[in-house]
Image 1 (cartoon, rainbow, N blue to C red):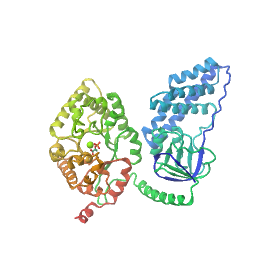
Image 2: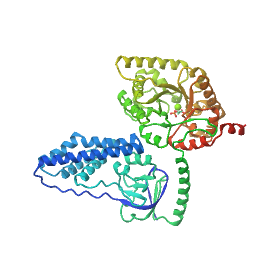
Image 3: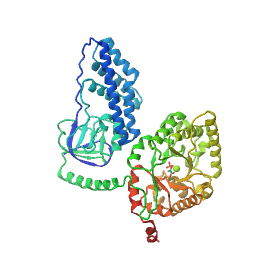
Image 4: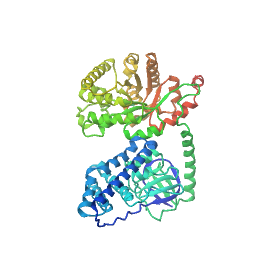
Length: 548
Ligand code: PEP
Ligand code: MG
């Protein structure tokens, strides 16, 4: 038995024959061409065919893994049409009187080398993309069928690396898992694998040759291990684990498309929390009814400077469009406390968790707030966006927000910029907001309870301080009573109330939340189906009687 460790892209266990995928080296010869015009024309035709193939791949990926992941094929189409790339090939054919294949291969090498030498990680990864599009062009020019990964029996694909176009062509029924020597966790292929939900590893230093080809393999995606030629004990153990996992998964799969409704007819919304547009595919895969918390501050945290209105608009628009009319709750930036952003140049504070964070920054520096609001109001034209304001403690803050919103709308109006007014709600995550939730409910469209901060401020325990774990009781009756109080006050005012803190995904409490009448739970995408299962198996009235 040989054991190799890699980085886990997606969990789960796969057992089966290993099939080594080695790309057939495209043999490109340098040929002298007489009719240069005809050769350029041949290159143009090949480009058109390749673009058509990429469109088909885009459509397939869009159906299977969502817009965010399909976008790579759009990028490839653009790269094929890129002026610099095309000019380099045409110029080579014309000046050197060489065949199109040679010009493409040569350009691919030059561009890949140029991208690899760049400092920026994102640009570095484009080297793989330029090779991918060039190989596609070569395949078309040489009149071959596009390769893809073809395995006759379901197998574990072991490869040096897999291009995004190869990964998306994986026939899910025939591929148990894939393991690559290269590739980063953030590469498009890894992202696609995650969304497809197959166990996968990258960065695994195993030989990609006959020493593993055809042998039995076990991929433990969760622990990042591949066993080649496993011994009987390991095989037995892993088979047992796989059986348990498969049973759980199968059961959950049957819940897709089903309503979140209890046995006695009570409904609840199950939404997803995201921090990034990259998370959208898993949101769709797990059948979320909407997005309950998009932590927009990650857009700020990922950058070295303030994101522009246009940058933000494009992101919010993409999320709204991908969710296709389902509610997308975007929280305005919640910088401060544990989420520090250097370019905000905040004063150093003794106690940042209780300092200038979230809405307080926005109200003190309205120019930052207005930029985000403009982007959100503009993006609302493209879907059902809702805005959520964090760290609210008073009605006065809401009035100040409303004044700024009025200014933003007037400015958009004046400039003739298209916008739509989204729903607007608040996070209830301070004890103050809980205690005046009856008054706050009259001012907004919805409440979402942030139990992470609400617990820290209620129990006076820093949520980051693991040394205080013995005092940190997430089920503390004070917090549970507060949730119940907020829900009651919301309902009295005719608005809905959900939970978007981690407690919302605590399955021990799902029944309690149903009893309280919580209208929505926003959880990480992987938690949606397990909670749906509990909801559908609960009879709220009976449970209430039973726990008396
Ligand atoms: C919360 O406080 O519960 C919450 C959802 O927000 P964050 O964890 O981002 O502070
Ligand atoms: Mg919070």
